[in-house]
Length: 191
Image (cartoon, rainbow, N blue to C red; front, top):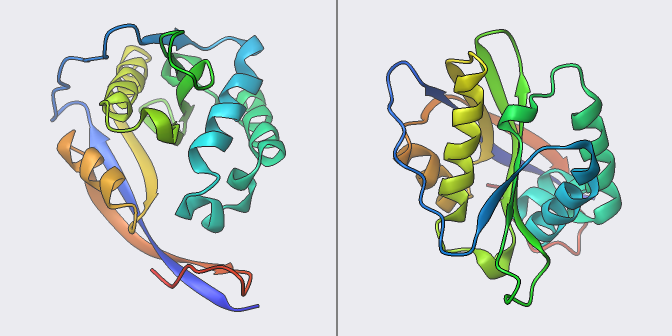
């Protein structure tokens, strides 16, 4: 199987230098705070969000519910897990999609540095500003926990995500290349 290289950015938000805009959620959508009963809900939204995206190739666990469930259990059981920065978005009940449509998880790396693990919006709810809203909500959770800097890693080819992060004040700190063995049937190219 061929090896492909995926360009990845490490981006960082500095709360001491960058104010956050107000959160705007479309009518009927609401944030749901973390609780232990929501592990599977986060996993389902994560699987729905990533299964047909480039990150499912870069990180195969994101391509199916079992991998997302295992990942969510690992995140939630970590001593560095930060519930205040971990959210779901619930959509209005009249939309014929899963009950939850957005997910984000936060971790502490030190007492002043946080990390966003995954942010995902299911395809049928994209383009509504939900990614921006849940990212701001998570950043507010980090800040309320005393974290002043938050980083994330993103595949450079995910232009919409990179643009979103830039629009909120994230800066690229580093670029690296992740090598991934990709099945020959995959149509993805090196990025």
